[in-house]
Length: 218
Ligand code: DC
Image 1 (cartoon, helix red, strand yellow):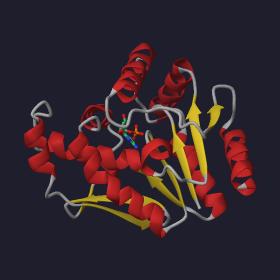
Image 2: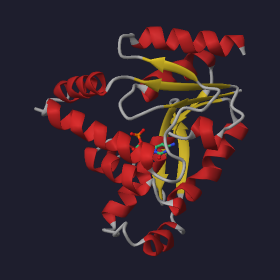
Image 3: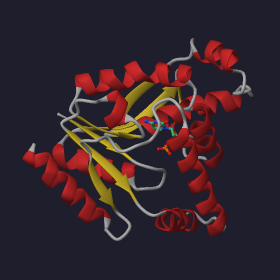
């Protein structure tokens, strides 16, 4: 059985997908991290992403491997574990831009489908229900208002000891939504057969319970 969870940045997809996977004994697949690993490669090698042919040439030989260590997804880029660098803001912003390129999406498509073929997965991303796993047994579109998403991110950064600017965080979220929803290839949108969940006024536990209930009914 496969569960697809799509939605905009900061909607809580990864937190919720991890808990759902744990409860059901499934594997959690974070596809955003895969796009982030390619973005990290592009940043590290100072590759100009406006040159599509160059990007295609440069990423074609790179190896991206997914391993699970204590049930946590680790990403290896050309043999190096890069997981700890992937959540940086600059990497996320580059991932939002570079994921619009067809060569980047093509590189990750087989890897994602293979994982879903080999295991019961909860896979989160932007195009899982619409494009990667159109036959997933359960599809969820998880969202929250940009204000709520910005507040959640703000709290996370404050906990880490940062001093963030809430307006800038919300602006970044709005820009990211626009890029992810308006790109030509595999844009973020709700699959027709997805369950819509707005988590703005819901706790994490409430959202997890709703999803588990749907999963148990399939
Ligand atoms: O979920 P995230 O913030 O880690 O994703 C980073 C970027 O990667 C996001 O802005 C868009 C892109 N992405 C995508 O295009 N398709 C996916 N399935 C997952 C992420």
